[in-house]
Image (tube, rainbow, N blue to C red; front, side):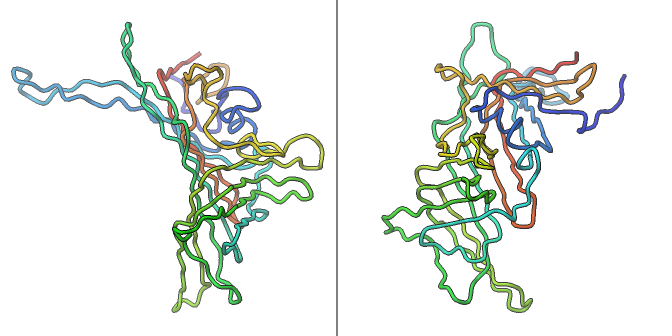
Length: 302
């Protein structure tokens, strides 16, 4: 028997590879992971039947599956407070903005199928396109009319930019949206408390969204966005889950719970199913993410 292990002794050793790999960039370059949770499920199947044991119901396991949730700070090298963030929105209300959030989500599609040798684990692949939603929060201004939800008759695209940091005169670390539709406007007026009037908007991305990275001091070296963007922008569609063209996920994740002369580890293939970014003026910029494992999750001690 050894000693108990703490989280500070562990690490996500690797997840995929290459500079353009969303998974590798997220955990090794773009953000600093601060918490990881692996959830393994093997749901029970009720096998109670006539003629079986009379004392209690009986069960056996069905196929197993696993997921991972994580939390990170951005950027990896030197975490920022959201004070350099910014929201711009064409023909929209962006007075006294104090924070924004962006959620990118992709469904995990169950592709478990027959295998001649039998299977113990369920298999998945990501959906072809994701859904991107978000919110931004501000204060009511006494010299500007409010805007509410986007009218259903609206036919013109309303561009939005969500900035993580201002690195002018060079390109900022940001997400640019071709058309954002406002789906909710929440107006708060705390009369008795005498507090500030607030505005909370929810939006959905309709169509294209790009991820831009700053060139920092003007050199050709890219800055570090949450996803591996570029100074000209990289289209955000679906995670790069497949190095080849056969549609089979192959991004291996290796998690070490104890990293030393003898390692306690978990390894398996997994792909991103969501990335959520929160940028508030007075808080660290936080990134939370989820991943779907596909196939076997292997525990090891070596």
